[in-house]
Image (cartoon, rainbow, N blue to C red; front, side, top):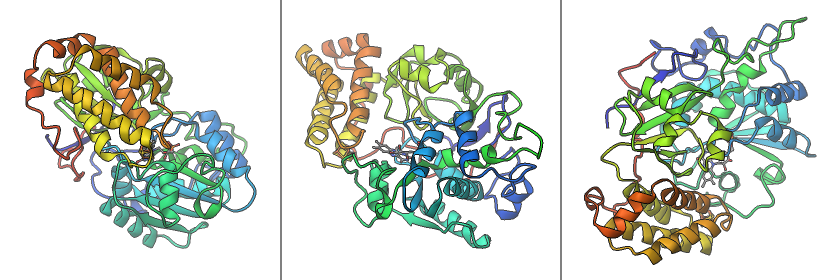
Length: 439
Ligand SMILES: Cc1cc2nc3c(=O)[nH]c(=O)nc-3n(C[C@H](O)[C@H](O)[C@H](O)COP(=O)(O)O)c2cc1C
Ligand code: SF4
């Protein structure tokens, strides 16, 4: 795969990615020169004013579930006792790179947002939770560049795994246990780190806060950060990879078709064979994904999702059955082996997709896959099993002709696959600051 590039959709000005021509890690002076740590003309909004501004702006979580941040802030703030903030930078999805990029490149933006969120919920402590060494080092260096913060911020490192970034796994790890999910309730907002109500928010979500917290000048109604940019559109970070001429990390506006962003930024020249959405979590889409509007609810209503913003393009040489078999094998190997339904369910679904890829499955196998995909979701302590079921369900829904063909003949593309390899399909290699930057 060519080196990842970063770029910004021409319809927006960057808010999260650095402007073109500014590669490298942004230090405190550079961040402050862009207006960082100062807010708007009226400084920063605090407490309930900030929570209301976030709710009005409609900012939704970028860790995968797209839950409204305003609701989460208010829920934690309303709990009695001490509160804790966890900024989740673990980035377990193998095809996503956005959180590592933000932590490595814009640590002060993340720390500014961390302080804003911590103050909004009245946190006594905040943790930046990461597995990437360079990200951890970048945040530690940024903390050393700062004077004392109003809330103590600690960097907590964890060994990388698919489930380590799940919110209860993060809380458990910070509390000294294994980074594996726990049963809910209690949810972290009720009882989290050290037993305190805890807000767990994704790095990209938190990185949007300094803009939303910028207070208007006295006597003015609108803060400079809340107009959603010159094009009037909110943005998100998309890791666009797979069979695409210009794979990269892109800042993209919500509201346009996925295919338009993939063509403009990724260099596609038309609808690909399909997409794998949300990292692995939201499953497959056929060509129709190309025209779907980049909107959390639109994708959800179509049985898919934007998840953490990772989008994988399936080209002519990527068989969707082979893709599903690879992802399912990954889920089988990388679930936390805690829940029988997930341990056995991912193995069973992996077995059928592998048999399809090997050209040895029958109609009865497909019917079993269909039934597992329908009744397994919701049966694990975390949503890993739901993600695996999404992949199975979406394969059957989006590519019925290809599934049927695999019952008749061995597919030449699948014959090349090694499902025993302990790799993550479409994984983004460790991110290196790219030589080429685009605007
Ligand atoms: C298996 C699994 C893995 C997850 N991994 C991550 C992760 O690596 N990073 C992350 O921010 N959220 C991850 N999440 C989502 C978190 O549980 C949580 O919803 C999120 O951190 C909340 O942040 P947000 O509201 O800003 O999206 C994962 C969820 C599941 C079910
Ligand atoms: S659902 Fe799967 S990944 Fe989640 S805790 Fe249970 S076994 Fe682990």
